[in-house]
Length: 170
Image 1 (tube, one colour):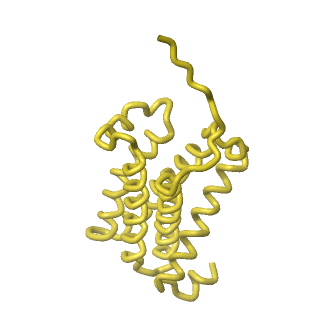
Image 2 (cartoon, one colour; image 1 turned 180 degrees about the horizontal axis):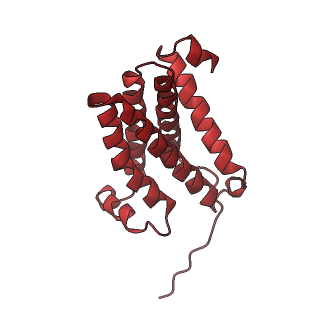
């Protein structure tokens, strides 16, 4: 018996996949904004915790999207070829660095910010590599996603009331 699979353009992603990119990008941008605020003399522990929570929520959305959620461990086995694997591998050190910044030494926020930038970069590369939506294969996709994440994170930083005048001016 021969089966044939017909390729189709993917016209949309459902809300669970979208949630990963929306929450993950905003959380990563919020962590970056928190690091900038810390460099300006603020103590943005709450904003950092919210950023980590948003990334976790985004990853939970992906877990809900998987057809067989308990096979999600398989995402860790293709680091050489999969941006999703790279995204998943960066999360544990990101959460450790974020937790260390909140509970141990606030200077760990800079490590968390670098890891958050790598996380958002991986997300941007996932979208760029998506063959199902041709518009995302453009070279401008990666910088657009990075800029959007930073804008969303900084905007959320201001909205949650953690920003002082220098941060708002920035």
